[in-house]
Image 1 (tube, rainbow, N blue to C red):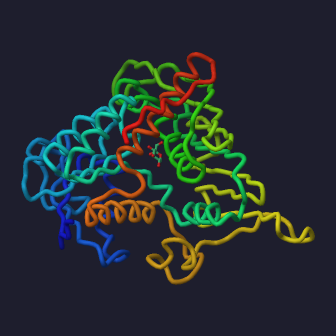
Image 2 (cartoon, rainbow, N blue to C red; image 1 turned 135 degrees about the vertical axis):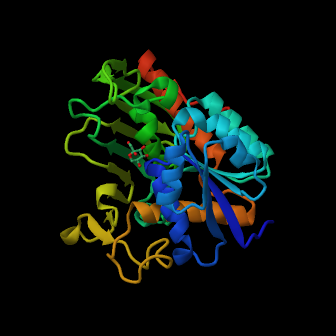
Length: 381
Ligand code: SOE
């Protein structure tokens, strides 16, 4: 079991997620002082300008445009992959083959076959490999799990999960890799639906069969900064019905075309004895209904997260101070570093990323063939 006092990270990519992960590494010791420090060593991006700017902005010591060089370095322990989806597999596999620890953004891969290859590679490697599903780390989501496990809502009957955004909707939103099947694998389904499927798996269990409909509302978009257009060949919106192992049923709606919904990742879970609901836009609140309450006071109660809730001891000393996106990434990175120290992944391993990818692939197939579709159970164990 490794117990390094200090780890060094190479960050691959300097976009939005590169920024959030870098902040999380920087502030990790103020939340989890017992964990090894993660030194922000080297940034990799495709141009010198991007790599240099990334290193400066995110507080890294060095930069390079050669990912091979970063992986070959013996002083680098962690490869953090925050690049577009089509590069996840080659980068992660090369890093794992070199024995590095790998943290990779979601969705893990373009296809289930790719994700399986990555999970297999992770199993053979001495490196720890995790896929980023940061929202499941929010105290309110972990509290929901704790309440479900304690029996507070009885047997889970239904799950309703939404991830709604509206950034793709305005006229003129330009084409980007997120609108390309070749580069992203899928559209709303993989980009945001994957988070809901992760939470469904975390809170309710495995999805065994799906039915679905998907639509592309805007089939071509203008290319940024240039004349001309490019085709959109991914889903703008996917809606699915879910059947869970154990008998619960549910729904998923993933859309980047929901006016007024900015980062509306929400779920409602109904059980035989109560219900839970959560919406990321109010990420500090968990709503809990107990059928055991006397009928004159029955209603959803809003629990404001604080020290008594999961992770609260590491966070702020007073309820309601508020936690958000960055704290969720700190928890994510904290779990990853803890897994390195203990030599074993908890939660979102690459095997889990593969499992989520099989559900997404079944949903995409179901949207094509219009029929209930089983989720392949042929998993990497
Ligand atoms: C864009 O839809 C995006 O950045 C997603 O890729 C992230 O996973 C989500 O957390 C925020 O929105």
